[in-house]
Length: 150
Image (cartoon, rainbow, N blue to C red; front, side):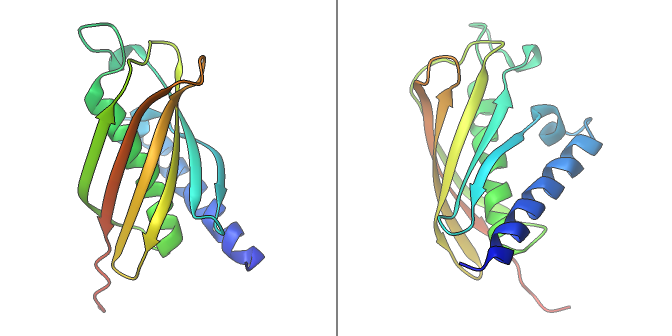
């Protein structure tokens, strides 16, 4: 592994997150993702998402759509970072819900790129409840990169 690849991946993810925080009126910014770790060699990333009051469903736990969105954000950060691209289109997202995530906790999302190609990247992930370490959801996602020459 080239050490520069790892540095570029970390910088890309951190720049993406900083851009989200800079415009906290956007949905992605409101989700408040935080990079925990990433590995270019293993094509993995772990991110944390605080479970905030505005995210609750009628049962008082994290809304399922926001669980899916946390996966989409985390997987998108990794996919764009590996591809060296600023934009990617989510073309498929499949989420399996296992248990509820309580308010005030943190949703830890661990993702892996199973294939990082020129135009398509396929990822899988697991999400955990920080306080218990129990798995809360899993997901698979695919992204398309439009690499047309200008």
